[in-house]
Length: 142
Image (tube, rainbow, N blue to C red; front, top):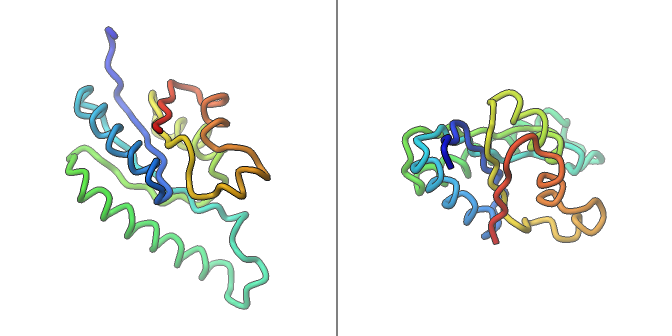
């Protein structure tokens, strides 16, 4: 590889495989002296719409929970050039279109499977979608 990656993104969801992808991404970021974006997507379509609690409160709580998780993960990773991003939206679109474009991502790390095994049966694998639709290289970690 002649050129180095400059902006690496890793999607995490709390699963063992996504955390494995996180640590692999840190290694790649160190080797390439790259900026690392650690992203947890809050899938607003999967939140309870029939809740008595207003949607903006639910999203605020989920965003805070994601931020706390990402901060703990970042502490474990000990990489200085890292940005954590709790992001509300559609995971597939966010990880293949919105975030890669916004941050000029040239490498994406994801776990082979995540927490939503039942949902994957219904809507397809997020990691598979990323591999097929991302604008850059993708590393899938098992």
